[in-house]
Every structure is written in C-alpha cells, then in structure tokens.
Image 1 (cartoon, rainbow over the protein chains, first blue to last red):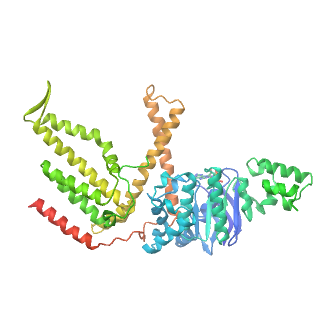
Image 2 (cartoon, chains in turn purple, orange):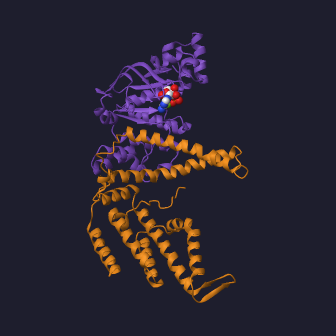
Image 3 (spheres, protein in one colour):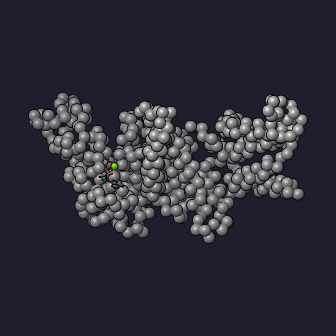
Length: 271
Length: 256
Ligand SMILES: Nc1ncnc2c1ncn2[C@@H]1O[C@H](COP(=O)(O)OP(=O)(O)OP(=O)(O)O)[C@@H](O)[C@H]1O
Ligand SMILES: [Mg+2]
C-alpha cells in the first residue's frame, strides 16, 4: 500500500529530518510510529500525504509516486491526515461545513456531500453537533470532528499525528476505540504516538531516532528489548515490572505483558 | 463567546428557506429604505416589519437584544449629539448646551436607523448558515468582471469565510495569552509598553503558526482553489421571485 524507499529529507533551513528511511506498509495494517521529540515522525507522515516531496528516494502510495505532482490530489484523498492540535485544523464555521470542506474540494454533488457529512458524523457519534461551531467543542469532540472530516473523503489510509496528546484520558480512549473500529473495517492506520499504552493495539511498531528507523516489528518484542532511554520516554510502572519479570525469567518475550490485565494473566493465569 | 454577535441559529423557518441571494439583496433593499426614513411613523412601520419577521420565524428575541447591546455606547453618542446640537425649541437646559425638541426627534430617528440596520443584518445572519451566505455572495459576485483583475468570486468567498473563522480564533488566542501573562505577574499599569509587546509579539507568532497549520490542513484535504463544489445548492423558488418583484417595487417607490 505504501512503499518508502531510501527517503531523505532536509528542511529548507538545513535540518536533516529524515535520513534514508525505507518502510513498507501493507493494506489494512495498523502501524504505530514512535520516537523522541524531533525524530521526524511528523515529517514522515507529511511525505505520505504528499504535503512534502522527498529530497532523495521515493514515496509511493497505492502505486502513485508523490514526486509526480499530478498525483497529489489522488494521494491526498487516499491518505487522509489528522493533526495534533485540535484547534488549528478547522476550516469551516460549523461542524457540518468543516466536514464538507474536503468533499467540496473534490467537486462532488451536493447530495453526495450531504450523504458523506451525515455518515461521517454518525460514525464518530457527533450527529448532534452538526450545526455547532467547532471552537465551542471540547478537545476530544474536536478531534472526532477532525476524524469525521477525513472520513468524509473516504480514504483507504488514515494518518494520525499524535492526535490524543492534548486530550484527557477518557477522550483518548474514545478516539482509540474509533480508530480500532476503522481498522476492523479495513482502513490502513498509521498512528504516531509517544504513549506506550497506545502501542498495544498496533500490528507493528516502527521506532525512529534522529530521522532513521531503528526498530521495526512486533510492538511486544520491541518493547521487551529496548530500554526507556531508547524509547525516549519513561515506561509506565507495568512495563518496568514486566521487564524485571522477564529478566528473572518468570515470563517470556512472546507474552511480554503491556497492560495490567496482561500482567495479571501472565503471573496468575485464570486457567 | 459562544453567542457571537451575528451568529447563525439553525432552523427551518420562512427566512431560513429563502435563497441566500434573495436575503442579501433584500438586506440591501431594506437598508436603502431604512436610510431614507424621515418620520417616526415610517420608522414604526420598519419596526413592525422586523417584529413580524422575528415572530413568524419564531426567533429568540434575546438574540437580537444581544446583537445590539455592544453598540449601545455608539448609539448613545449619536443620539446625544443630535439631541444637543440640533437647533429648535429647547426642552432641556444644561447651562452650556440645551437639548431641543427637534433634536430629540431627529436623534431618535437617526439612532433607530442604525439600530434597525444592525437588527436586519442580524436577522439575515441568524437565518442563513455562514456557508450559505458565502455561497450566496460568491454567486452574486460572479457576473462582475472581477477576473480581469485576477480575482475570482470564489477566492473572495473563501477569504470571507476564512476571516470569519480567524477573527474569533485570534480573539481566543488573545484572551488565553492575556490570562497567561497576567498570571505571570504582568502589570499593564506600571509598564504599559512592555505589557503590550508581551501580548503582541506572541500573538503575531501564534497567528502565523495557526495560518501555517490551517494552510496545511486545507492542502491535505485536497484544496487547490479550483473545481470546488458546494454542499448547498442555491435555487430560486416562487417565494424568491415574488420577493424580487416586491424589492423592485420598493426601490422604484423610493426613486420616484
Ligand atoms: N518547518 C520546519 N522547518 C525547519 N525544521 C523543521 C520544521 N519542522 C520540523 N523541523 C525539524 O525537523 C526535525 C523533525 O521534526 P518533526 O516535526 O518531524 O519531529 P517529530 O518526531 O514529529 O517531533 P514531535 O514528537 O515533537 O512532534 C526536528 O529536528 C525539527 O526541529
Ligand atoms: Mg510531530
């Protein structure tokens, strides 16, 4: 679905943000990208969405090369993106208009736009807020609207750039539930986060450092191998405990527990 | 800030169902009429038209009170100027200046003109969704030869809706910043220049960043400025045509 070959990118001011990255992402996969601040996660996502063009190497999305500018519209409707800051990604004055913005850009008919807006609102459970101003919504509700705006483009891939980092715990799990739902219905998910609890849901973890991919594989195994310095953030106590248990050979790598429930299951299995 | 001045109230009333273009033209016609009013009796008629519309559309009266409230100082100023500076029979003597009966009448009429201009504008924005309004303006501007100046009516409509969006956002940013600086012990009375700079500099920086981010968000949702369609289809119904006849009659009455 997404083929990234040897991609390097420097910002105009000379910062090398991506350094020969190669990565393949399959259709329907749920991939998380993690790494320290400034390691290039957002820059990578912007390449997949065609907002940035590779300095070197290539990015091919569903057979379309992002270097070919005539592909950009099709790439952007295939791979939708949701940004970190809930506030500054709104374009419309009302929720409805904001969601309609993308389909309007595609030149769709009015009835088709209305259908998509209604469906998108339903799938994020925000139908009741159709005529509200986005500014008056809570952070979690804003991100749901942002998700609906992307859904209205009917993308096959959705890129999430730390969308939950400004949210409280319960809105965060709401959004995650929606994302898991989308993944089940076949959408390819690329999810940038630095919250370890959120990695659990992914099929694959890509760990980045200074513009390079340093780990790429099963989240459980990678977390059991790396130290919290490599990850860039403190591990939650559960993970620290699991690591101690692994060192003491009480549990093994394949069932390395990432959550409280898994840990309980690992030390005292309920048959 | 939830109830922004001139905000939209969703609904299905008579005015809601009218074509935005009819409403924009109607607003222009009624404004011309209002500016031409010269007696209290005609002003009462304007008031009657307004109240009837609010009543049949079942709009909340409080919304309209809110939309004139911020202008009260301005209205008072206009009224007092007329009251004290119009020649005629004095009815209130304040040594230096005196208010006249003619001034009272004229002041009343002039002030009411402004009040009704705002009320009718609020009536239109309350019953037209912002995007309906911008689509309407876009369609009305389309026949103008704007493209010889390198602008399309579409660009204007997009600019309008983006600024409609940015102004409240700037205001929010400003409020947050002010709170943040105040809580860090900023004293605007002791060091006014420093206080202003400490608000303006980050505000400009924040706004530039927001503009950047909004531009990215627009681009990532396939915005190119061309080939856009609209969720709202505008088509004139019988009621719209009827109103156009009425508008033409009204304007010709004024002219002749
Ligand atoms: N517009 C820009 N101009 C110049 N340099 C930039 C720009 N945006 C990002 N960078 C730099 O590129 C590098 C990668 O940035 P990027 O935003 O991709 O990191 P990130 O992994 O998303 O970080 P975070 O976790 O903070 O979001 C950083 O060193 C950053 O300073
Ligand atoms: Mg980032």
